[in-house]
Amino acid sequence: MNITRRGFTAGAAMLPFAAPFAAQAQDAAVRARLNAIKPAGFPRDPIEMTVVYPAGGGMDITARVVQRFFERATGERSLVNNRTGGAGLVGHTWLATQAPADGHAVGIVANLIFSDAVRSQGRWSWTDLDHIAHINAEPLNLVVNAEGPFKTGGLQGILDAAKARPGTIRVLNVPGGYYEYLIEQLEAAAGARFLRVPFQGGAPGITALLGNNIDLGFGFYAEVRGHLAANRLLPIAVTGRERTVFLPDAPTVNSVTGRTDVNWGVSRWVALPKAVPADRKAWLAAAFQAALADPDAVQEFRNLGALPNPALDTPAKVAADVAVMAEAEREFLIRSGRMQR
Image 1 (cartoon, rainbow, N blue to C red):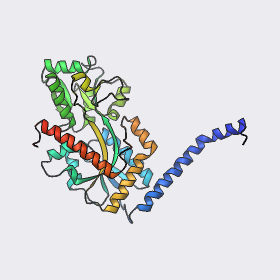
Image 2: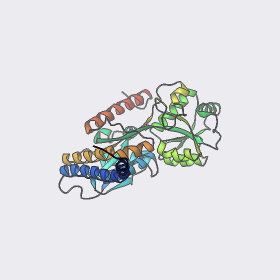
Image 3: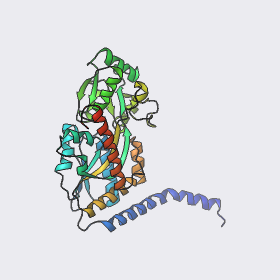
Image 4: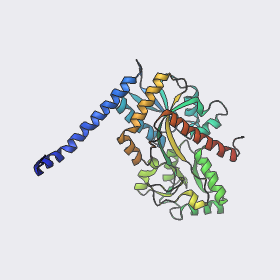
């Protein structure tokens, strides 16, 4: 076959126009597959996606991306509802004990649920939910105000100040969870003591940091990236085992403190009340997995600093991963004296 330069150029020029049609065909194929297994008469109402933290935070931003791609995959209506209070405890308790088990209520949750289960004092457990679809994971980022007193010196400078002036360096705290655990590890590593300022979630704390009302904040990349780009905040460390590609110049907390166990981050997934009928649960799992596997969704989450794990592609794998995380946190809570073995 002889392809002329003119023919090649014309064909290449058509590629941008062909891409949308290919995407539409892919969307139609996904929707047809989901329609083939959708239970009769379901859903009759919009799917309510519960977020237990305030609007504008990392979990809320994540939920709204999930919502958009769920609707794209299914053609069904949905909404995001922020059930806040008790630093997450109110919303988690509602999901585990009060949410209707008809498939219309789902949770966009994270491993922060484990500490809330402990705080519930036996009223409910993370095992009272079914964990059906992995979303993404990312570390916490430690940030300071770019015009504040700790714009130089990094994390070590803050730790030195908290040791020299105990109880005066103000730090963002969401009580009863990873923020609190991280503060304790920082204090233990440096022989320091911070002034813990409580917030309902990371986003309100970042707002306080921007106003110089606290000295040290923790946030997920989506919560801080705009402020970093505008040079209003500076990154000083990350909590993962390795540096993140999104903030390559920020050291790990472990490398600064000499510890090896500061690995707090977030893993997010979709959860359902336990008694949702099997056919509805299967459809919801397939729908969310299809939505989250959309290449556009994957890229959008990467842009937000969160990386999906494509290996967690079935409810069984997601449930097993959640169980591993729960046991790791249980061991930490035992070591820190919060639980008995």
